[in-house]
Length: 217
Image (tube, rainbow, N blue to C red):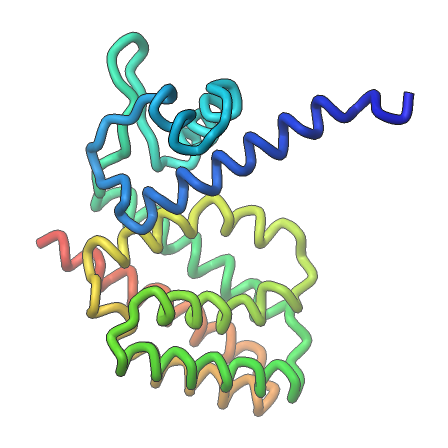
């Protein structure tokens, strides 16, 4: 009886493993926009059965990263200007809410300052992967300390689309002006100005969205 739930738990772990692997391949461009994908091929590449791969693809379709036509194709979604316009206000609102709810402290400020320095160094080195990781870590200081479980749930669905757009539409241009914007956020947080901090966080994301939107032109 102690192991009654094991098969279900095991299946969930495999499904999550497949989801993360395929999602990351889409976000970093290994699986480019429009590429057709077959669950059989993915199963072989990931060393998994087709069931967790199919479940992962269903979840990725719900996330807007994969599209399917029954009996026809499963493929990576194309980059879509309307989808970008829809995604960035949601991301901006969630991160701003996290900034409003997070208890500002010297520890938080120090953590954000370290991540912004890491971010700036990655930009100088032209290391897009490291820059995006540092940017995520900077904003996750608010998300983590906000202690609101719904915020990361929403962001987990939307952020892969945002990062995919940033990588594929911008490449080495990632982060333009964000170092200074981050510095302003840090200053507001250090002054314990919650409303200004939240507004600056919101504008930081909206400015990135505006740049990506213009890149479609």
